[in-house]
Length: 111
Image (cartoon, rainbow, N blue to C red):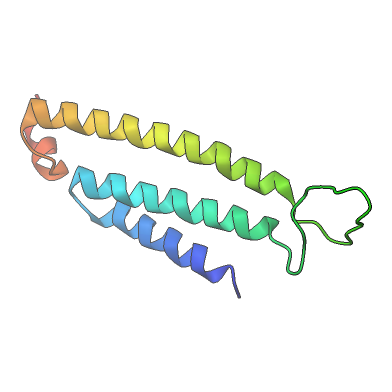
């Protein structure tokens, strides 16, 4: 039931990618899809009533939070940032060439 939020966020981003015609809005939608995946991975690694994965001598814990999804999310954030920067760079070059962010107008120009 808790995993519904990332699914809804991902579907909102997917809707934006499929329906919107503005390149900037499509880039924002891709970023929303990225954040939904980050949230899902962070939620998978969470354990209720668990301690951070740091061992302290003399204290024994029964449950630890899984650190692997957290590490994956940190790596994915860096990759997502690089992807977003690349998409913005491409969008800027398209705007410089065609003078618009509307993909329908860009398709008609084909030059």
